[in-house]
Image (cartoon, rainbow, N blue to C red; front, side, top):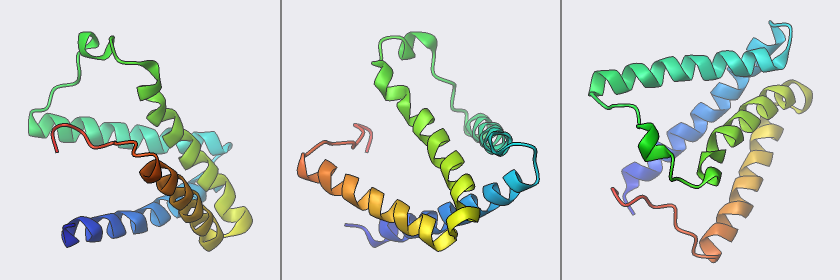
Amino acid sequence: MNVLYLLAAIVVGGFLTIQGLLNSRLSQSLDHPLQASFISFSVALVALVSFMMLRGIALPSISLLKPLPPYLFAGGLLGLLYVTTVLLLMPKIGVTNVIFAIFVGQTVISLLVDHSAVSCRPAWL
């Protein structure tokens, strides 16, 4: 296993804590927590489209997306659930408790996925 991959995952894990804290504070400044989720995803969408344009990566065509099974699009909904839950819970139970609970959930599901040999490795890796 490449050590740089592990270090990248650790750094991104730290970013998740910062993201949750920023989104939580943003939600406290707005009228409703879902407004903070909306802003978070809007900023992410603009950044992603900009990055893709800079790299010359086209948006996927409808014909490429149409035959895909609907469950493959659930990642976006899970992202929404994650961001909104974190921004709601951090002021209620604290940053450490939220991140620890997320770690426990990720670990349990990761063990089940690895045990059942479900592969998420894309063909291009």
